[in-house]
Length: 221
Image 1: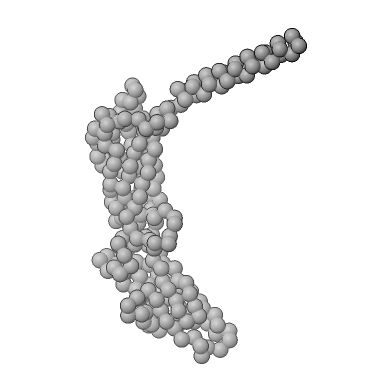
Image 2: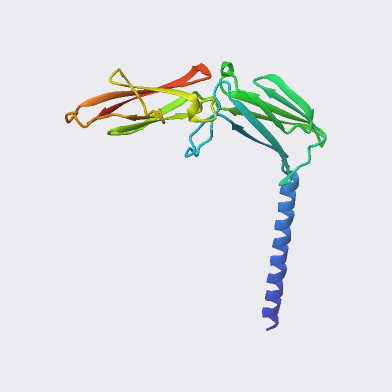
């Protein structure tokens, strides 16, 4: 019984020692972890409500960027720190506690490069470089055999009503619905089996004629 009691006590002490070592290692790891700049961004151009991906900016899109500093697994207070922002190698803004900025994406530069510096945080300058992909307007066509729908992505508009949408079928002009030009009704019932119809949709920003996209599909009966 004496040996059994000693073994139990030894096991308890060993378990306590392991817990203490784990706690010490965890504390040291947290203390030694370098501060991390966490950057998020969003673009305010158009995508359909069902779209669950990231809305990518195109030339002329407004992009909003937000910054937080994580230090020791917590959000650090940088309200008194000088923060510098560069966009595509040009200084955008600098200021004390400047954690949020916005800019207009430029197609001349391709992907948009954001560089951030927090000056003199605990004696060191902290830096972050981020590339935001630059896209182009896109258009897809879905549906058939008689109803087709054009769905636009990434245009610099608030809603689809700001787009001019046109259709053609086998190179002949076709007209979308009066109350929804993004939908084309096409009578394909008289087509013979194996027949093809080349359907094309084009969308343009009503406020910027150079901003547009087109899509062509082949419908087979």
